[in-house]
Length: 202
Image 1 (cartoon, rainbow, N blue to C red):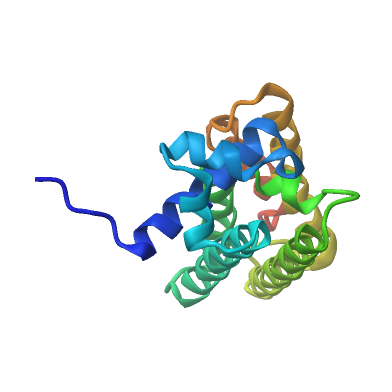
Image 2: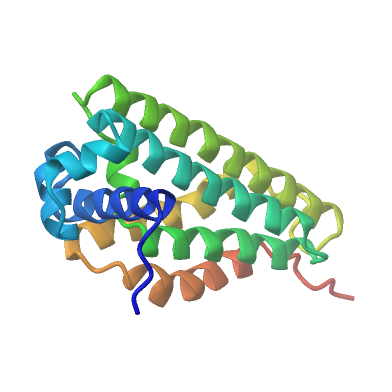
């Protein structure tokens, strides 16, 4: 016997469908009709859980923000060396984008609704926190002589983010989220090897 979904479960289904559709057709093209069709619901059933379309996007934003913040907190709390923490931060984020490939498009939307603008602003703020953690972790790695002492943590963090952003762009062009984790670890290894403290010579 199938368990009837709770209101909370249905809200998750609706916001998840909106996020999936945002990758397929673009965030500004998603309609409640599309969401209803995907879930086999009527539009009134969607509005029963979210009185306004904007409320769906606010739920999407809450989900994404919580995931990014959770990944940051998990990496910072992990008993890891700085380089391992950097790898965890980046790979967790790439996995998040792989699983929610509309995220890059949400962050760069132009001419969107006020709700979309709020969502974009929130994502930019949390990504600023992500970058700040990268800077702190690179600084720690340099202080421990894992990375070169002359390495500028801000520049290094921008290069790390450059990998994430370039992979996200490739994903959008190829429409293939698997690219993110398939190539991400290899490219990160290559970059971090360039940050490494050279072995001291006699």
